[in-house]
Length: 75
Ligand SMILES: [Zn+2]
Image (cartoon, helix red, strand yellow):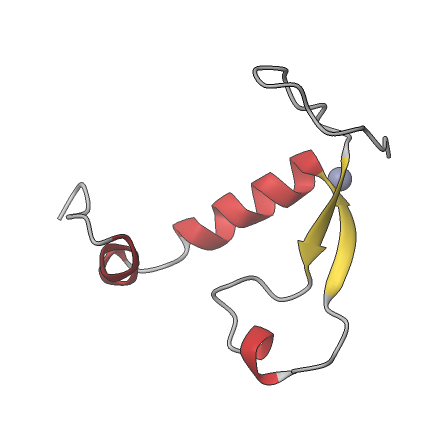
């Protein structure tokens, strides 16, 4: 993994840059019930982003609509 200094605006993110990822994503109720537990893990940017996209795509259109306040495409 690569540890980068803060990005310059417009610079591409190195996909191997280290990020802090949540053990439980924001869709997982465990994230909100385990107060005080250390739930941050290191993950590269590529894995962190891919995991978040997959988890978001697994949500219902109604959930995404409710959270975004925008009418979802394809409904
Ligand atoms: Zn990775």
